[in-house]
Length: 270
Image 1 (spheres, rainbow, N blue to C red):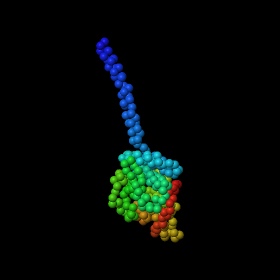
Image 2: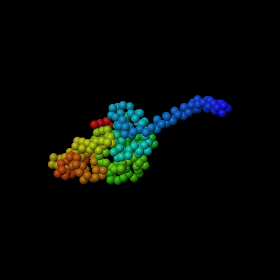
Image 3: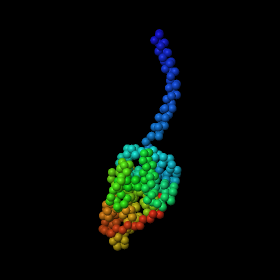
């Protein structure tokens, strides 16, 4: 009886501590839930596509920019495990940030060099420029100058962590820098990337390549000249024109590069 009475007393004493403990633990639990919510890993592809859609429709993009700013470099490395995933994500981000930024302040385009160098893509633990995305990540640290034959002298560690394994020249027909001569903007997804890039390449070349009447000269977009190393030089450019059906197989013309129209056209969506 004495043992039962003692256990009963202990039990009531323990029960008496439950309510104070609950009051103590409740704010700690709420804090944990809040932290979990803030550190929840978002799907980068969904963020990039939604951001691009908000720019296209003119919707408020601030919440999506905040979502992008919560994604860390490590999370991108974990989520973007293939070149298709990396290219789809970064093409969408490049086009979205370019169109959004120029929509906010078109005057930035008066100094294009500064615009493309400006650190304006905010991640959780890094800030990137449009040049970082195009030349560091998608072109594997190829130089902006030298027609693409040289690598950058100073390579950003973040770019090296996020860059593609293989440079794909078709990105030049998907990236829109805001100018009238740029390719139109499309929404890219990893599972359809190959067919989408093929379509973009063929469509842009057919619309912008002009063969002379005697088939001795062909004028191609200036972007192929700026980055001719990405295409394998002039021989590679001719091969591309043949394989896409833009030139007949028998044509062996000399190549000229068309002037680039830098007039502002930031929302050129397909």
